[in-house]
Length: 227
Image (cartoon, rainbow, N blue to C red; front, side):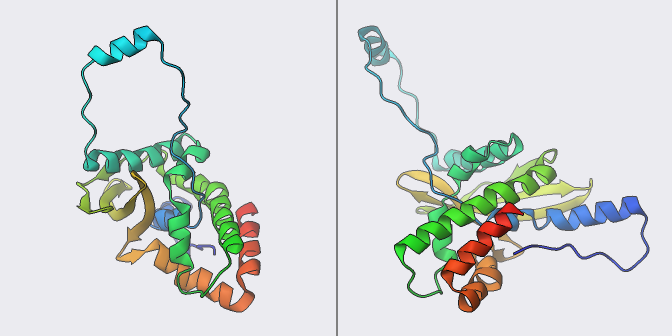
């Protein structure tokens, strides 16, 4: 479940080799980002008794126009990156719909008990928080991300993005979002024509379940999260 960065056999200087390695790692950051998360509400709301003056003020105040779907989608992804940059991992993980992503990872693994699915989601969440977010923070902390206009089809959306690496190299990727219960969540990632869920399912999750079973796979993910 690791993503080793191979080194070139040619004799490079230490500084050039470091840049080369960082470039290769950056291209893998977001697929790594999508390997585990727990479903949580984006914001908690508390109800309070309105006082008469507040109610009267709200009655006369102009109604704000609700943000468009495009604005909501862009805001969702930008919040995710912002929370990662400021190491607010509890908020970052709430923007990723772990249950949806986990279903994609397990879709070809036959019938799995609800309790095992829940433990699988929790294990994926631990991995993202403790392994993926710190890596993403390290490489995205000082890099600006450019966003295109999202492509929306019903409750599904794709937000193409790009970064400029090392001053000239343009790396492109796309965020996959779904509107679930009225809220947009990040549910997958597309890089070089491949979905993160599909790559992780075929290369990591599915082979492990076939070899070790679901419970041992969960244990392995949790162990990797702590390393």
